[in-house]
Amino acid sequence: MSPVGVAANLAVDISSHAFGFQESHEYNEATHDVFPGCPDVVKGYMYPSERPGWGVDVDEVEAAKYPPTKFLFDRWAAVVRRPDGALEAP
Image 1 (cartoon, one colour):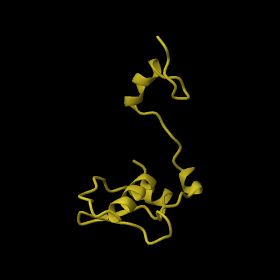
Image 2: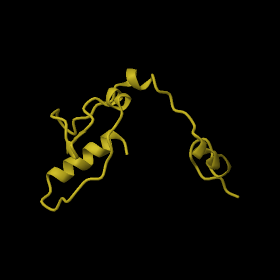
Image 3: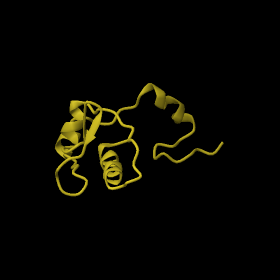
């Protein structure tokens, strides 16, 4: 999940009495550069940004440094999906 999605989930978590735990992972430095305000995980606890709203922004200049790439696990999709993501009928 993107840092924006995690921040949205975290906002619901901290505002709910029924909250139990939030699964997540620690983002690498590049992700923090592209998404300033990305929630931090410190000693197993996730901390939201103190910025307004969900607290996460998108730095488009930083994002341009990391163009999308295809990975090996994407190869199966070449036979069942079109480039726009739509399913290819048999």
